[in-house]
Length: 304
Image: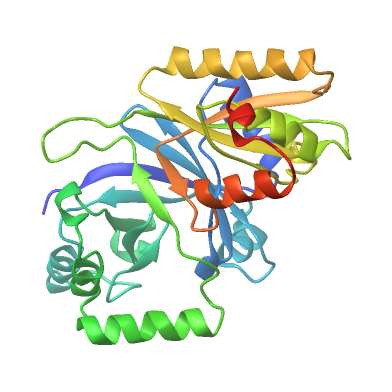
C-alpha cells in the first residue's frame, strides 16, 4: 500500500475569519463549497500544490465537527491520505492491529470513498483514507464499480440507493466532470473551473442573471443567497476552460457588460474548483426555445 497526501482537514468555527487568513492573506484559491449531508458539514477546499487544505464548517449543532470544536476549539482535525485500493488498505491496517473507526469505506467529499483510522493507532492524529475513482472507471455501466467498491452486489446497491431516494435522504443526483483529471488517452478536456459571484441590488437578481446568461462561456447561472460571509452575493455562475487568463478575461467582459446595462455590483469574486457540476435540473435547449417563443422572444436574439 502506498499512500499519498490528499488534504489536511481544519475545523473552523468562524468561516469568514478563516477565509480572511487562508484566502485573502495567503492568496489561496478556494473551490466551491460542498456539503456532506451524512456528516452535517460543509467542506471548503483550497488547493496547495498537489494537495489541499479543507476547511470544515459544521452545518448542525450535533455534527461531529461541531462536537469537536465545542470540546477542543478550532484547529487541525485530520489528515487525508489517498490510496488506490481502500479495502486492501483497511485490511492491511487491521492485520497490523490498527484501530479502525470505519471497518468499511463510506461516501465522502469530492465523490470519493473514505474510512477513518482512530488517532490511538496513528500517534494522536485522526487519519482519513480516501479512494477516488480512476478515469477508466467512468464508463457506461457507472454503478457496477461503485457497488463493487462498496462490497455489495449490484442489485443490493441499487435497492439501497432507490430506498434512500424515495425517503428523500438523497436530495438529487448530479454528474460531475473531473476537470483536472485526464482521459485514458492522456488528453485533458479542460483545466480551470470557475464559480463567479456577484452581489447586485435586491430585486434585480433575475435581470442580472439574464445578462450573465447571455455569455456563451457560462454553463449555467443562478440566483443563490451567499450571506454576509460571502459578501451578500446573490447571483452565481459557472464557467470553465483550459486557459485561466482567458476565463478571467470573460469574467471582466461580463463585469463590464453589467456596468453598461446599469446593474451595479457591490461585490464580486472568483472561486476555482477542480470539477464542474451538471445538474439534471438544467433547462434543455428545446425547452428554452419553447419558453422564448411562448413569451414572444426570438431565441436567436438571446445569443448575441
